[in-house]
Figure 1 (cartoon, rainbow, N blue to C red):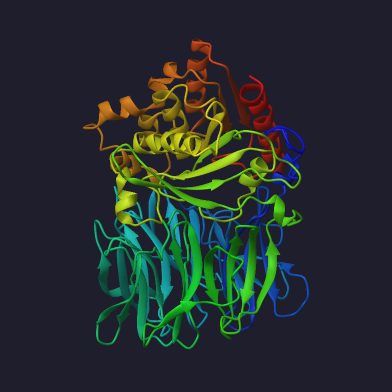
Figure 2 (tube, one colour):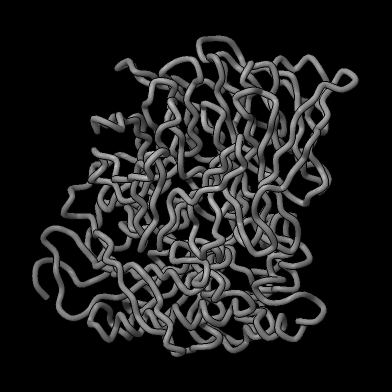
Length: 626
C-alpha cells in the first residue's frame, strides 16, 4: 500500500449527512414580460419555487407555505410564468401568485391531480393536464379561477406537453394509449379552440405525426406562429422537425446519430427552446452519455455549439426569455447540478442556484470515462467508469467495484457529476455505471433490445460489464458489488439469481420482485409497461414467473441488503418482504431497512443520511472484511 489506507477505507470528505443535503433542482420557466425566471428546488420532502432576475440580489421564495409537486405519473410540469404571475401545482390543485407579493390563490378545485399548466397568449386562460380516477386529459380554466374548469381534450389514455399557438386559437399536445409508453409510440395532435355555450369546444382536431412505433416529443410553436417544431424518432434517432403551418410542409431540421429528446418519464421534459425572434432553436444533443447545447439556424440549418458551456457535459430543461437569454439545468464531470442563465451569443454564464456546496477540490472528483464492451451475442454495450480518487491516497492492486444499474429501465446515466458516485469513489471504490441494452441515448434500436427481454439482457450486461472491468484491471474480481433501485433493483435481484458468485454482495433499493404484482398493482402510468418489456398477460404468464425474483429468490447465495419505502405506490412493500422471507429461509446474510413516510425513492434528508450510513456498514461487513 502507498499513501494512506486500503481501498474502501479512504477518509472521504463526503459524509452521509452531506448526501441528505443535496437539493433537487427542477422545472424552469421565464416570465413572459420580464427578464426573470422561476425554478423548483426540492428540499427534502418539500418543493419550493424560487424566482431570480438580472439583479445581483439573492433569489426569493414565491410558493409560500405550499409544497410544489405534481402527481400525474412521475410528476413534472410543475409551473408556468406569465406577466409577473406564477401558476403552479400543489396538493392536487393549480395555484397562482404574483412574483412581487401576496399569497398563492387556488384557481382549480381540489380533486384529481394537475400538471403542465400553460397560459394562453392573452393571459386569460390556463390549459393543463388533469388526471382523475384513471382518466387523463386536457382541461381549461380561467386564469383568475372564477369559473369551474372544463374538460377539453379527452379520449386518449395519456396526454402531455400542451402548447398554445401565439394566436391563441390553436393547441398542440402529445397523446398516447396503452400498451405504449411515451417513448414507444405517441401522436402529435392539434385542434382549434372555439367559444361554445359559455365555454370552449375543439374543432379541426388532427393528428399530424407519430404512430404506434413512432414517438413524438415536445411540440413547440415558433414565437411568430409560422412553425410547429417537434422531435420524432422515426429515423431511429430522436430528430428535430419543423412543420410549416401555412403550407403543411414538414422539414427535418436536425437529424443525425444523436438523440435530441429524452424519455418522457415526467410531464414537461424539455430539451430545446425557440429564440424569441423565431430565427434559432437551441437544443440538447445527446451522444455517448454527454448532452451539450447547440444552436441551429431555422432558415439555413447551420448549427454550432452554444459558447460558454465548456465545463458542462449535461444540459436539460432549456428555456428562453423574451430578451433572448437562456436558462437551463447544467452539470459537468466535476460540476454538480446548477441552475444557470446565459447569453447564447456572447457566452456569458451566471449561476443562479447550486444543488450542493461545491466545496470539494477538483482533484477529489472522479471524472467519467465512457467505455464499451461486447455482450455474449456480440452487441456493443455502453457504460461509464469512474476510478477511485482522493488526493494523497493510493493503494496496491485493483479496487473494489460498485456496479450501479439505473432505473427505468428506459433511461440512461449521463457523463456528469453524480453525488452517489463521488460518495463511493472518494472512499476508494471504483464505480461502473451500466447503460445496458434497453437504455436510451444510443438510438431506438439499442433501446428496443429490451423489448421482451427485460430481466435477461440487463442482468447479462451488468455481469459482463463487471467482468470486463475486472479483466481490464479496473476492479478486484473478488470484491464486486451490484447496486440499483426500482427497475435497477430488479436487475440486482436477477443478477444474483442468474449469476451467483460474480458479486460479493448486492444492494437492492425498492426493487421490482414480482412481475405479476407490478402488472396488477402499479400506478396507471406503468400499468402495461411489462407488456412490452416481458409480454402481454396471460399469454406470457410462464415468462413472468420465470423472471420474477420472488419465485427464484431461494437461489440467491450472496449477501444482500434491501431498502424499501413504507409508502411506495410503484413497488409495494410486500414485494420486498417476500424476498426477505426467502433469504431468511435460505439462511443468506441479509439486511432489511424500511423507511417510514418514504415512497419510491428517498426525499427526507434524514432518510438519505440513514441510507448511506447503512450502505457503508453493510459493505464493510460483507465486502471489505468478509
